[in-house]
Length: 94
Image 1: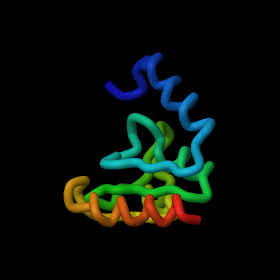
Image 2 (image 1 turned 90 degrees about the horizontal axis):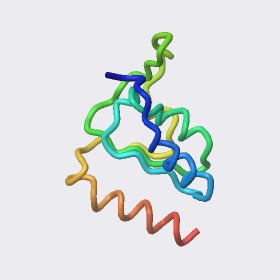
Image 3 (image 1 turned 45 degrees about the vertical axis):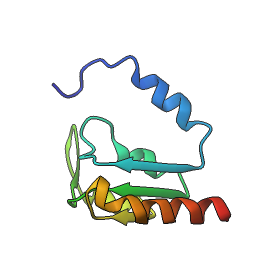
Image 4 (image 1 turned 90 degrees about the vertical axis):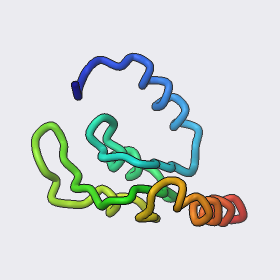
């Protein structure tokens, strides 16, 4: 199930080449390593109701995924929408 070929994921990586803010909503990081992507950005936001341990194909990194993001909103997507909007607005006004 995980690690399967997903040729359309390349479009995600292409889009990320021209962005300055990375936002991940609701991820365990097991399909796409959101923590690895977040490390490439000065500004990143994770929205997830649970803290998730970063686990790769070789095992645990012994860190939580949210530790790789500059902001962590520990709520479900609907409940986080106002705070997420505020963070994005603050980023755009920098």
